[in-house]
Amino acid sequence: MSKSRFVFDKLAKLIEQGFINYKDFSNELMNILNSKRDEIIFKMKIAEKEEINVIGKRLEKIEKRLKILENKNLKKKIKKVKKS
Image 1 (cartoon, rainbow, N blue to C red):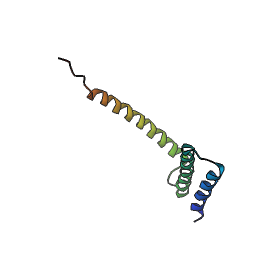
Image 2: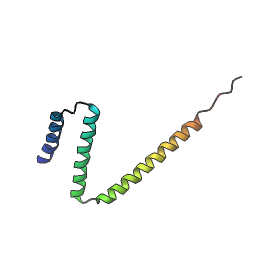
Image 3: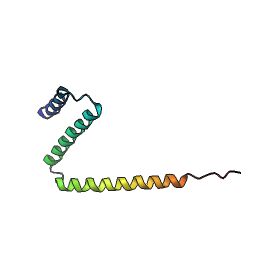
Image 4: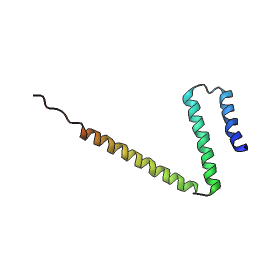
């Protein structure tokens, strides 16, 4: 119960401090949730922080490559029609 209360307390503080802008609010909420997720993972001793960082970087590189390949495939599929 105290763990969920922590998140609610953080949200209440954000509202009190005047985070009216939705983008700022959503960014701060994601930061809070990510930190709680990391705490849970470390307590469960699933992986070390360094391993998680390395895997995250690899995932980002793969996502970038995938976007590049998708863009290339879209360009190849689009064919110009000859005017008669």
